[in-house]
Every structure is written in structure tokens, then in C-alpha cells.
Length: 244
Image (cartoon, rainbow, N blue to C red; front, side):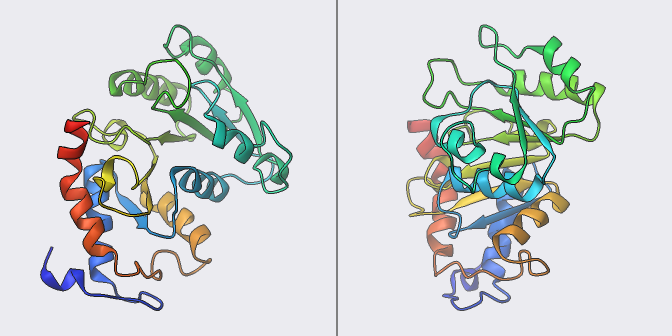
């Protein structure tokens, strides 16, 4: 990172080397091939909706294997409410497999994944429920089980509140796509807004096309002179998480 990476860039955001370096840094931290880190992603829920709506099409099935997701995701998916913008309204099928004593129900997961499933979602944090957050070891174990029976399914981890809590991140243990907010751990209490999507390069590009437009992907998108705050935030994030 050099001084020029903090240059103010507005407008379309063409050739913002600072933004591109920031995204490479996030990809490295999260154990992923690529990342999309933008102020236009306004929250964790926004990042999750952006990702799911980019990767799931009419007729696809997603399964939450960590039970019912937290409240803001329920309306987004279409479990509650009647929004005509929910995943369900666009023809995406949703199923869930509940945890058993805070453990993944491996038998049910393996059995279900032998049939057609496009995406598996894992919520790492407890959200607003009374369960414990899921450890990286538990997530790594279930990812290995999933891959034994289904090589094609997309494994997505909702990483909100989980970044830097352990020495490994979901990308290090085989997750295909990892999603979170800069107003939580990786913003270090400094980033004033923003979110990220990291993972396999082709999947991140699909999400970027949903954020911008088909054919544009990650090429455009001004960071509104927030590169400085984003770099400082991720630099201070380990200390902020440790103190929390």
C-alpha cells in the first residue's frame, strides 16, 4: 500500500488502484481468491441479499444448515413478510436443517444434499438466538462432509461478527463465498459504512455484476474517498476484535 492509494477518487471510480489493493487484502485475510469491498454495500443484510440474489435463480434451492437465520434475513428470503422482492417471490426455494444441541445435523444434511441443491448457507454467529456461535472447526468438519457427497453445491458462510475471532477464516477451510459488514469486525470501528463479499473469483464476479451491471463487474464503483478509512479500519481490526 502506498500514499497514492489514498487519493480521492469519485465519479465512476475508474482505475482506483487503492480500491483494488484493498480488495486483494480482504481476499488474503479471508482465505479467498477475490473480494468485493464497497461502501455501496450498506450492511451485512444487504451483502447477503446481494450475494444470494446474484447466485440463485428461479427454481434453485438454498438450504440453511444452521437453522433459522436471524430476523432481517427472514423477510429477505421470504420466510416472513410478503415482500415481492424476496428470494421466494423470485422463485427461489428455501429449506432449513436445524442444529441439534448446537451441532450440525450431519445425517440430515448428507441425505438432503444427495438431491438437487444450489447453495448451502451457514450462519456463523448466534445472531439474536440463544445458541452459541459456530466454531471454525465445526464449520470445517461439515464442509468436508458436504464435499464428500456434493462437489458442485455453493457453500456460503455468513461471517458477520466472526472475522478475526479465530486464526482461520471460512475461505481457509473451503467455503466458496464469505459475506460480512464493515460496520462490524473488519471495519475496526473506523469504517463508517460498507460491506464485503469474498470467495471464488467467478462467484465474486457474479455478485459484482449484480451490484453494478452485467459486463461491468468490479471495474466501476467509486469509494467516495473512503479508502483511507477502510485501510485504517482493517489495520486496526485485530486490536478492536481482541479488545471486544
